[in-house]
Every structure is written in structure tokens, then in C-alpha cells.
Amino acid sequence: MHKIMIVDDNMTNLIMAKKALEDLYEIIPVSSGKIALEFLQEMPEPPDVVLLDVDMPDVNGFFVISQMKNVEKLSRIPVVFLTAQEDVTTEIEGYSLGAVDYIRKPFTATLLRKRIDIHIRLVEAQKHNERVNEQLQKALSEKIHNIVELEYAIVEMFTSLMSNRSFIISEHSRRVQAYMSVFLDHLIETRQFSVDANDVEIIKFASKMHDVGKICLSDRCIADMGDLSIQEKEFTHAHTILGAEAVKKVMDVISDNRFLRYAYNMCRFHHERWDGKGYPDKLMTDSIPIEARILSIVNSYDIFRTTNDGANPLTHNEAINRIRLWSGTHFDPELVDAFLNIHLIIGDMRFEQT
Image (tube, rainbow, N blue to C red):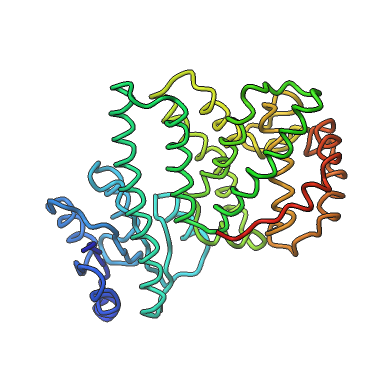
């Protein structure tokens, strides 16, 4: 049974949270941040999730999480903050310290169970993928797996995490990979661009990972792009760096791998702009890797047609007109021309929900 530590100096809240979860999980109720830190240090097996009150006397929730992050065996425990505060600054501070979620008081038992269920599933997925990583590392050292099998396992590892974190992210990534496939095939057929035909299938496969950094974002940042504070938007932009750094950790183990290089470039640079006003590195024109420039167009098309950054989704023709309008500013103008040549094919594509 998964273990949940609940830390709250308010006994009423502590009892309510315990009753809401005790049928499903082993509950460790703690009435202060100081005692929580002592328990966490002494426990042979730490809890799977810590539900942590922000406002506590002497030792508050921010101090507790900062201390946890300094201890190796505690640093990866997901911390979900409980708070009655509603200011964005407090929430951003919590996320910057490593919290995975916020639950506002007063909460209902049903909401609490649902949110904790999500994080337990993420814990299970993480443990599963750690086991997969260990197996892959062993296989690499023994030279059992060939490189194609390894690449497939890496993509499946990240996409598994994405699908557990957010249906929106996983479906977006699936559609973008499909659009990328059609677009790349057209580019190879026309031979206008410096895309290595031998790498096309690798690029298609790696494109599915472009938003892997969004695993680290809050539910609000993922689902409500139209109503975010400046700080939240900046944090959302960081998904490019977070995703690239996740890929780089694998690159540090497996050097000189084309698949990982393409994945890294698409994670980090798919929000760069042709005019240099994108993020995170302000690259411009052909200093942006070609695979990221291609991905930028199909990624934007799918966003326009679905979430549209919080506005009403656009029709296919409206999305195409916006891409045409942004040619030479957001997008490589020659790639836009090539995309417009296949826009009817793109518009006719349909996707079944998984």
C-alpha cells in the first residue's frame, strides 16, 4: 500500500485529510514541520507523497520542502502543498522550490482523493521507468540491445510519463508527430531543404518528445494557457529547457547519438522564431536547427486548431492564414511555402482518441 504523509498543524484539517485517504493509502499524520523532517530522516522507507501545509508555526511548508531537497533520499518525494492562500506569488515560490501541485483549502474529500490518485500514478510510472532505465543501462553495458530498440524504449519512457501527466500533452504530441511525418516526407520528395533522408524516420520519432518538459508544469499551466500570470508564463516557457536537459542526461550516457541530438534540438528550440524573438535562446534564421524550424510550424498549427493558447480554436483555413501571416517573423518563409503546398493534406487528417 502506498504511504502518504500529511503534515498540518490544524488538527481538523489533518483529521479530514486522513479520513479522506485512509481507505486507499497508509496515512502518516504529522502535526508540525519539525516533526515531519525528523520522521522523514528516520523512516527506512520514505512516503510516496507528502501532503504539506504551507502556513505552520516555527517551521513552515517552504522550509520543510527546501530541507527535503537537500537530502538525497527525500529530494524526489512529490510534495503537494495545502494552502488557504490565493496569491500567485506564494504558488510560484512553492513550484520553484520543487512542489508538484497545490490544493487549496477548504478542500473536498473527493477532490483530495482525485489529486492524490494522480500523483500516485505518476510515482508508479516513475518507478516503472526507473526499472526500465536500469534494465536499459544493463543492456547497454552488455551490448545486447541495438540502437533502434534503445531509441524506441526512450521515447516510450517519456511518452508514458507524458500520458500519465496530461492527456492534452500526449494527444498533442501524437498529432504533431503525425503532421511532422507528412511534412518531412514532402520536404524529402521536393529536395529543397538540407534534411538528411537517412534521418527522416529518426526525426519523426524524436518529434514526439518535443514537449516532454511540460511534465514538470502545474495543471494550471498545462490546461489554462489563456489566463496565466507573467511568472506562470515564464515558468511555462521553461519547458523547452527542462525537456532538453532531460534528454541531455541520456546523451551524457550515450554519446554521439543522432536520435538524441534531434530530440534535444526539437525540445529546446521549437519555440525559437525566425526573427530572433522566440525562446529560450533568441536564435534566429538558419541558426535554428532545421528540424526545430519544421517542428515549429506543425506544432503551432496543432495549437491553433486545439487550445489556441486559451482562445477559441481556429478553423483549418484560419490556422493556415495565421501561419502565412507569420512567415518571416515566427517561421522560416521557405518552409512556410512548402507547408502551404500540403495544407489540404494536413487539413484532411483525422485522429481517433486513444
